[in-house]
Image 1 (cartoon, helix red, strand yellow):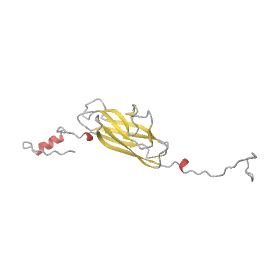
Image 2 (cartoon, rainbow, N blue to C red; image 1 turned 90 degrees about the horizontal axis):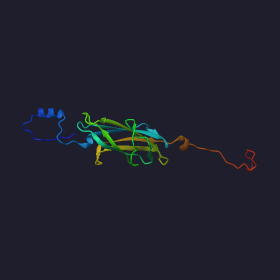
Image 3 (cartoon, rainbow, N blue to C red; image 1 turned 90 degrees about the vertical axis):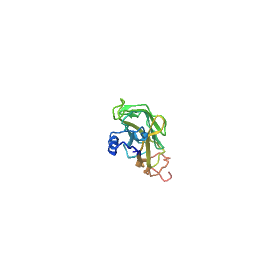
Image 4 (spheres, rainbow, N blue to C red; image 1 turned 45 degrees about the vertical axis):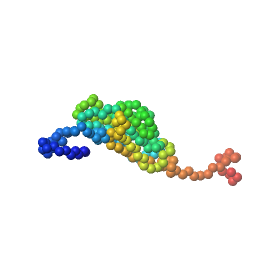
Amino acid sequence: THMINADLPSTTASQIAQRTEQNLYLGYRAIAGDLVIQKQVAKATAKIGDIIPYTITIENKNPISPALGVVIEDLIPAGFKYVSGSARLDGVKIEDPTGTRPLRFENINLGSPSGVGSDPVKRKLTYFLVIGAGVTEGDYVNTAVAKDSFNQNASNTSSATVQVTADPLFDDSLIFGKVYVDTNKNGIQDGDE
């Protein structure tokens, strides 16, 4: 929200309020307020080797113009890796993102709420990440933001957190027993073995 103070002697307060309600824009609009993104993760907890589904919803709130060539920049946690071929925009396969950290999903177009542009006003980007072997237990935050054609932030920043937990099979297992060399090959541990 922006406040403009002006001396308008010929305009009454009720006329200004009426024009404000009619979405009178005075040639300035905060670009970062036009696009709103929300990032979600399908699994709150995971183990090393798990594949994690992510969803980013992006919506154009600008009532006048479409948003063309938007880039979603997604800073994934260290040790997580994008699963090749998993990116979908509104359920349709798209090109894999560029980069590794951050991932850059490019050329996303959104129409405007007033109907300008042929693209939907709201889009849903989905993809998968796999948790790598070097990741330790803890919380891992994945943060995304929409960028404009000048590589400036054009939306809020949204994040999703995955808690990586120990895998009981590998991290909490204990194997005990003894090993011996069965020199006489009778399958029984004898006194000298």
